[in-house]
Image (tube, rainbow, N blue to C red; front, side, top):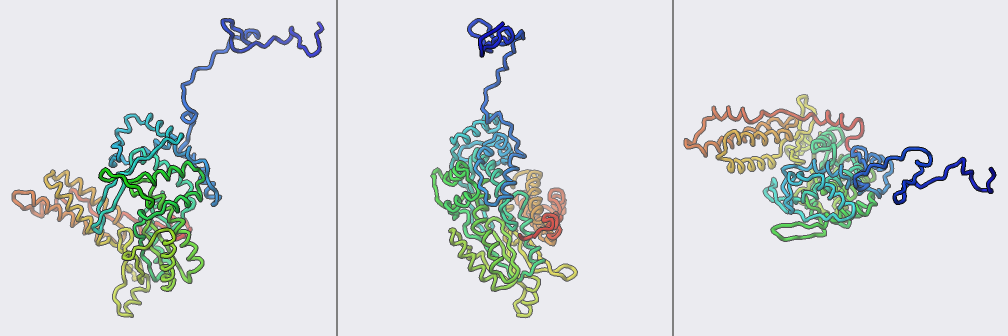
Length: 502
């Protein structure tokens, strides 16, 4: 059979019919080809692409870390989707303290958990479309060691969640940039790491002078414009930058009055320590690294924990020039050194002999992170940095215990004992470093005396024998034990052969 040119043979190739039926006629290709009709796809539940996407929290930021480590000048544009991922928000929610105070919204951890998945999906959606609005921070005050009050802010629960998620994402970038002598509020680093770095630096390097410094009202004087410029060095995602600006301008609610400021970050939020580290990284850390490489004649060490920092020098003229230069440097960014908490002292392995020769007595000491650092000796007569509990910190803690025991005077001994056990245990976990056992023991003894006085006050006989009191103290208050290694042992493990100061 012949056909016109360009036409197929109808007897060989069947006519292709539409897959979908028209009206009531089941016109489908399957019918023409002798096959059974295909079953229709199951109707899937309606959900957004964002919610249906599988997000691995553990590996999602690996690419960012590698890029940030390999390309120091790289700017990251796509970051917000890591923040509003429901899985990351859920992790941030679980990391929030369950007994933390509620913010201005009155939302608690327990009430938010009653409809957790819907709440997180709604929060994720608002973050994705730009509908998230942070609430003002509730102002509270806590007592400081010097008797003054430290202002803290309590963010709303959802603000805490988003801030924790943002910190997790931004840390993937900035942990590759931060220098080794920065220890404050960084993952894997603690105050004891900073203390060990100071002790090992003074012991192992040629340090004869210590500049103990503190930045005056640091969190209250951070300039927002400079902070945003520093952040934009690495973050090109305008949505993330806009999110940070919202937190900076959210304001503080105190006694029903809302106040806003163009300076500072509110202490208490999860994002504030990271923003402080970013600010000081550009304003202080990088400059210190450059100064000691270009202008110092001798050895220079530096250790910073948040706004508290210590610098050690081999020569006094280096220390004096550094003090003048750093004061000028910080002034460019709206910061200044605290005049009463900043001083230069002679400290090191030769300080004791030098001062004895000059008839000046024992070397001066300095306080750093709750410890008084002294020039000491080992049993073999070698130099060591002796770290003792600061007297000011010890007195402030005992005063707080005394005040709390007055409130708990009429509680059963068991309830008082549980509270004091937590106090003594927490004190020991922080201050029980080598060579500080005597002061840790003294704290336990003083707590026992305060407890004895409280029990005698509430008793009608107005007396409780020390024999019975010793049994109560032995049962409830744990005996002190050294729970931290020597600084050199810990740093050898953590640094893995790299420089301890850099």
